[in-house]
Image (cartoon, rainbow over the protein chains, first blue to last red):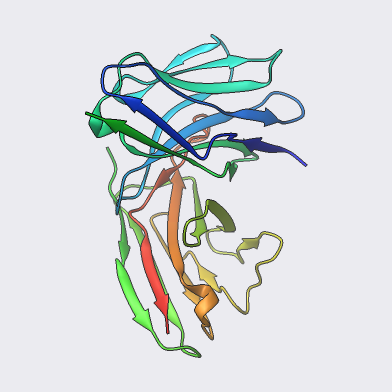
Length: 111
Length: 115
């Protein structure tokens, strides 16, 4: 079955430090991969996507992600985390426009 | 950017009753979907809302339990029928604009509690 996995339930970082949220995929063919963020009591917000092209994709709020075919990964990164980045992050893949989500990673950025 | 709204934002319902959730977009969309997010869990696709025809349901979801309508390009409803406490979840609609982007944009969600 095609899927994405987020191996870490939680990530804790200090403000100003680099933030990485991990995602691996098991998808046949060309993967269409996405990152979404869910702030408390708010809906899901689209951050970025990889469909084709450059392996490094840039998205909203200073986030970027690197598509790595050999490692089947699509890790989300931010060079300098903010307290306001504390939220629940989901990796997802699209199959015929239908999204399948990973389990989610809770990010806590401490001041 | 387009605005996606859902009504109600939250509700508390008695078991055995039904609730209809509305999703409205302020511009035409190509595709509309409904997802469920059970407490502390990830999102699961319920169905694709097809304009003018029956929705396409994912494995584990059936029309009798989750009837869906989509009468036009900007509006859809999801009904949660004969509710039980296990239906307590956040229900989210999502949309795709155009045909090349693939990314979905989500409504704010409807938080349903069944007692």
